[in-house]
Length: 85
Ligand SMILES: [Cu+2]
Image 1 (spheres, rainbow, N blue to C red):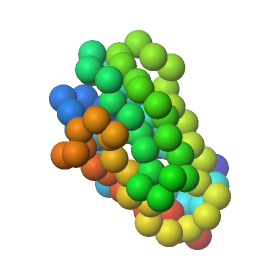
Image 2 (image 1 turned 90 degrees about the horizontal axis):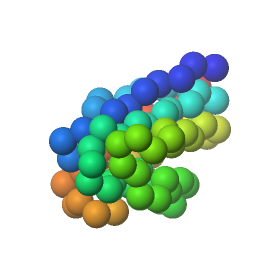
Image 3 (image 1 turned 45 degrees about the vertical axis):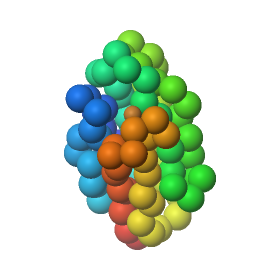
């Protein structure tokens, strides 16, 4: 199982799109002083508010498919995780 890192910085997820395998983990870390969230559009996960210095938010993806996510506070902040077998 692999881990992938996504940085939240300057009101964006970077990288905004990643492709992983089933069972892999994604770790989001915020570098912004403004609060952001990592929230799955379909409700699979929700980090709550995160700012720089907070512990990273992690999610392990057990099922395949495309999981789009966003920040609850900023409509332009969008990302997507594609999970393959
Ligand atoms: Cu945000």
